[in-house]
Length: 324
Image (cartoon, rainbow, N blue to C red; front, side, top):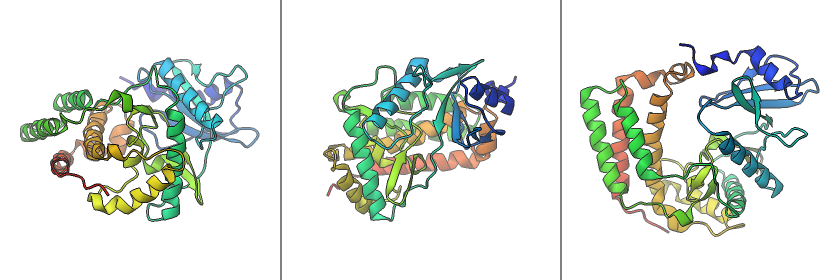
């Protein structure tokens, strides 16, 4: 059975752009994207565009529109983000045949350097400005981060898959159970959740010199503010990223008080992401882009390594985090 994205031929992509009066001057070039399909092209006026086709049935139209409206709100407040193009009627979410899509002006830049204090300070400034706007209202149609249910759903998807042998299945279930026990006390205070980028890793921060912009808000959600900070930190021992965090927090506090009280959530959030990432790969394996991009996922060694990572994460959660 053909995958749902198989119909997205170059002609289809160009026709979708033309349907909103944007006229490609040549065939689009596919960018690295797996959850959705994202391509770049130039138009007749030599403007560079990124066109994003949303994975069918993943988000409701209302949830996508809320992402777009959040980006527009941030842009109006002077926060450096890449907001989707709107047509003359103010529409940013468009439909062509079976697909929903949005167009963004292409933003060219490089990821910040974590060993550069000026870059870290600038990162903190951007996040502080983002979160200052985030506090103004809440999402009505986007998800809220929930550790317990998210891990439970992810575990079920992995255990129901074909990839683990009986020994790995037993070891995986055991380590997940241990993580669930360790995380049982880490419930997220609903009152502390704000509108977050949600997937704020270095690949989604682009800039030049010391000016950075945030891109790809596809996973924006209600979450603790520290969710947009911890993925920017190295994954080694906590003391390894104290200096980086100090620079980020100093920049952040140009706009807001840094959420030091949420530091104890960093390792639980890291565990959550590790578990969810493998479950995401499993759930998307019928998409041909995933076996091509992640061939090692089908190998037994991947699951052995993943289980070891989770066991290491248990050790991190058992250790108290020293706060400066």
